[in-house]
Image 1 (cartoon, protein in one colour):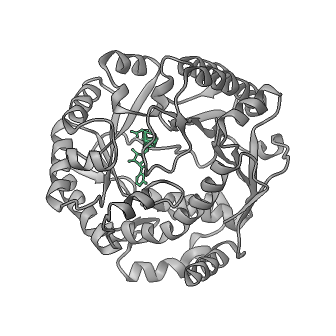
Image 2: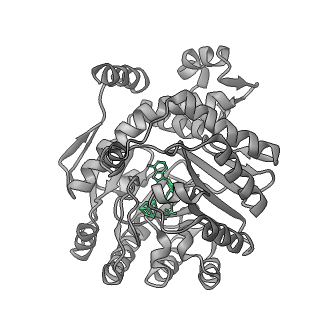
Image 3: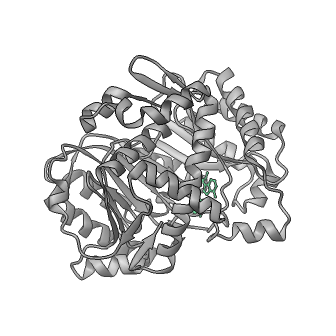
Length: 429
Ligand SMILES: C[S@@+](CC[C@H](N)C(=O)[O-])C[C@H]1O[C@@H](n2cnc3c(N)ncnc32)[C@H](O)[C@@H]1O
Ligand code: SF4
């Protein structure tokens, strides 16, 4: 474990010119951080689910109509506070995540969206997560009429034994029927999530799931290996049931099975884990490089600061009812951290232009990152054009495996602590 910490500290030092990252509590004045920002993205978090899945790291609690009502009032307050600061800046991407946003489909979500669209200069449609048990024909109509153009939900697996192991509340046949209804509704993009590297999962099962999704006409498949977050119930469950864990090479081979199935049907890789049917717009979380987060646990990533709202739903509601902003932790971003953040997200999308880096930071990409990227190119992990750098399939996998050394640890510390303590003093990553 010490060598892993050491390894992280070395890479953090090389990328950020500092060994440690620490988010701290304390009041911050927001308006100065919006100066110089021309446009931004918006994220809204709905922290409710009808059932809690044992492996899920996200901030959520069981849905209750009365809490959802108070939550709506709190988000409406937060929108008003930000509308004054954001003014007429265009909002160019809008993502609603959770939890399960469709828990609030008939209890507050429409009011929140009406307020967002009237108070911000919205220049985009909505990408929204949902749950397939909420996707009746009538609910799909309600979702489309709210302005949702890109819809996503977790299928996770298409074999009943895997759905049972994950404690998902539906069977494969119900999942397929929900996909058919959603695809038939005419959204610009329907994305479904799969989880792979499940207990005793075979390559044939994965390939069969891929083929079924293709036949059902989904526009995008996002496939993640199961991540075992220490603060969820999954590690304990896996120990009790003696689930085998897969190494990085085994997971790579499983992802390749899906890659091959989807590529053969004309899908293209559009992020490390997502494959989109050629010619369809992709479903994705916030695409704008800078974004504002609304709701409990939402993060905001501005030019020179990252900050997080409290994760605790009651504290979030209380803070806004008392006239306070629900900010819990923040991290000033040095120039090197801004560059590393930019690069992290571009690599996640698997391709980027060096000229975009230069226009964002007024420095040549080669001068800042050339020494790290040249060896990756020689190893066949990247292909380099005149201006564009693209990750190869194995580059996408291995660079992401490396990123996960950071992100899983960081997420576990940050989200784990924030879920236990509504107002932590500091979190050292
Ligand atoms: C917020 S949920 C999706 C929406 C909805 N709540 C649902 O469950 O269908 C986000 C997705 O993250 C993925 N996910 C959650 N926990 C995961 C884990 N431990 N490992 C890998 N993927 C995970 C699942 O594919 C899940 O569909
Ligand atoms: S996977 Fe989805 S439904 Fe399950 S707990 Fe997480 S957010 Fe809720």
